[in-house]
Length: 369
Image (cartoon, rainbow, N blue to C red; front, side, top):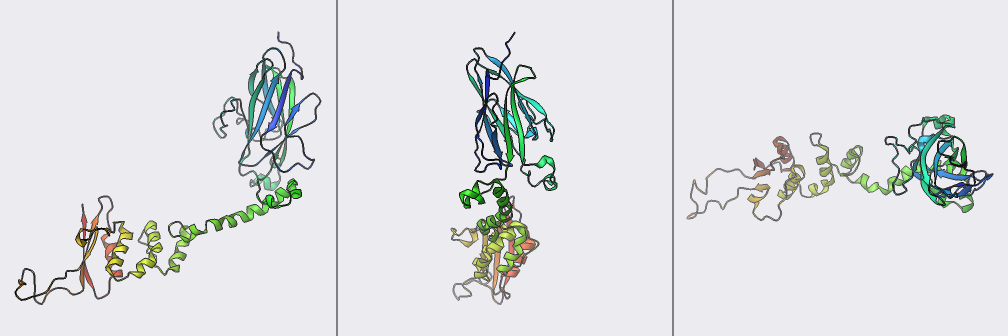
């Protein structure tokens, strides 16, 4: 039969790994305290919603034989906020299926309810380390219960870790701690040190930080709101009006963004072969092929049927010269469509009609490979 252990046989130490700049209204407390018999010191654990908080546990066996111990948790906070990791090399997985060392199966209230976390074997005269992880919901301060002031949304909670021998219900060692939920604030770093140590000021300043941060952050991304390729869709009419570009409802959003962004370039070359080719390039996505010298070999080919005319002794009527025929100010447009990118002929014709001089005529031919 195993001899009964006393509080001097086993020690339990809690060491929060994150030290907060603020202290509770009752004054500062030692953050890592070893629980001894009759000790009234408590560990203060400060957690921020949405951020993992790690608390290191050290269980030391002062006896000359190994001990099987059960670690239990009792607290006034929802116990699904907490997980224990006996393997400190791995990170906790909150929000997954409950395991043996997870407390996710408890109720949301769980006020004053205890639960076995894990059973540990501690070698003789050795220490065993574990990690206690806390994760508070992101919307802790924004929840409706917080606005109504319900008890579940209080800011300061109490907790107790206890060790018992085997399946015994009587703890041989206990370590109390306070779990304080606080908002994470960066504005307080601009305050004098004396005010940074006051917890109430941290929570008060957080109200202004949440109100002004979206406005301040918008300035850092203002360039994205002024670029038609990245601007929100609601801003496109404003950007189009800025460059006096009519939005065509028949074009999809991607082509509208491209045209608005390059509107000034289109205006600069409007009425020329270069301008028409550039416009068709933005719509169809066909390459400009500026490195190709011969116009007929380009993906967007715009040619004019010019000839040397009727020269006596050189021209042959019916072969390379005509009399009284031809179309003045006429040009031919030929597009070589990609296999998987069909081209809307009606839309292309409307673009050409819009961009060409009024006195010009044209012919359009779309070729597919």
